[in-house]
Image (cartoon, rainbow, N blue to C red):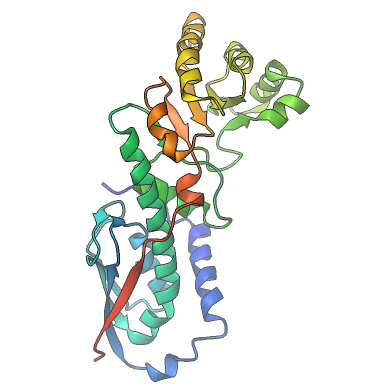
Length: 288
């Protein structure tokens, strides 16, 4: 089942802004298509994981409510080169006007979903989850994180208000682990999770003693994590708590080595920041 995407008013406004960016004062080629009806299909140019199909109908609806979209592949499904992804029908001017915006979004998101799926496959069977980060393209965060889920990944916090993560700057300027944790606990809503980034074993243990819900172990080698994790879990158990242990700073090529280190989660920005677009073309059929 494909992950759900909530079409909030903010997302709808964003789609309209992206269309406006391309249309400007209006498509100068539109008069050649006035009154014409068209059909078109999307074709994958290489293997990958499709994402972005759910955006096509809302985009076209902003231009002409008569446009129809038939998805042949759901978001999150694998596709092969040459496979037909969706079918479009409607006023030709609207199909042409929305083409580039819709394809650009889908190719970008499909690239992220594909790259995420490749890394998730490396961790298959290990019990270790793969999470994204806040390193996203401004204006595209909701969609890029949706693409991550379509590739089998998990979403980390979407913004600074989702969960509190105390990083090295907070610890340095906030008086250390215990003081920073106490200050956040005193002001954050009670359901909010508190994560502490640790670069040393001492910081990780201090985070658990201060009551962190999760510890992000940054920059540790796989072997060092394997040696460290049992002690951290024992310390959490002594305090009657469960804790999520997360690794970051892991190169994708080293992912397999971390799968048996005992951690719960690996967070990486690579599928979003390093992925290449999945090439998709739009093939037009004769106009009526």
